[in-house]
Length: 352
Picture 1 (cartoon, one colour):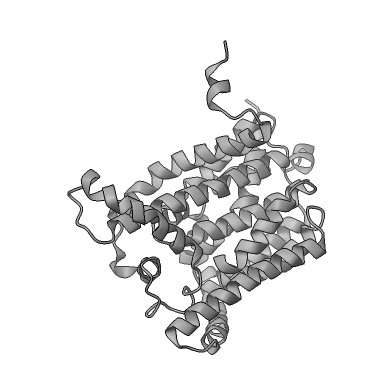
Picture 2: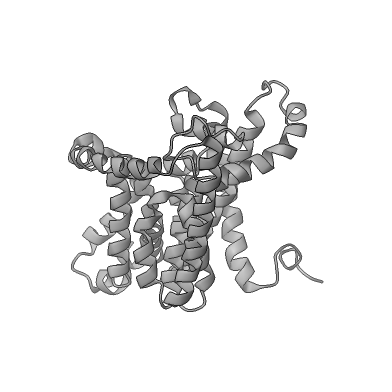
């Protein structure tokens, strides 16, 4: 008689490697992000109000910084259409209006961020982490407040986190992961304009996964989609493309502000709050065994120029945006791998 697992779970090992961590991540996010979706005060959040307007088909008062990130709002609008038919029957105490759309964002973002979590899990496994340790590390980083924001609110961070997760997974996996590079390069330009900073990193370190000709073809496809999106929205609003250029240049003013903020106690606290107390676990393991060969051969020996330059790309995002914690969460793929390796070697690192 077949077991329950064989009936419920897919037979393909590759599909199970992705489906199980995705389901685990989505289940965790659905719990963690639900209070954020229900109780968040939108009155002081221009970002969320802008994306709600975009999902409603209104682009006229949306800042140029967010105006072309249409994929997540479009997906939320598609999900909200059937949801709105039954929402009032399930939650009659909530007034009609934007509640179905907010729920659609919560659903879409949880699914997308869950996919990013599956990327983090499988990346940690490629680095040598045990399955249980990789799952525990994935859940640890998903407990961050920035994951709750990304999943529970009308934002587009979930897609950009997925793009970064796909890129780092492809670099770790190498041959056989070209599909991840294609997805990252095709979705990246529409996910966030600062994806430009990740492109050279992907082109260089993603070569074992996908050669330059195919990478450039995938990037061209993403840029064509971005160009079409710009043309459609700009023609609809009767504006010129000069706004996008001037807006991009204006972000350079954030460098000075971000540098001063990093140097402050408040900025340092914001950085440490990205992953909370989990930040100290690899650090404590390193201090405990700093003279041991375990550290050299186990934890940090698998990290090199790819990780250093990846973190440099994240740092550029932080300095340009001025939002240190939110952009710092883009470093999750590397930190999750490090945390998973620490959990894997816990018995060797911390003898009991």
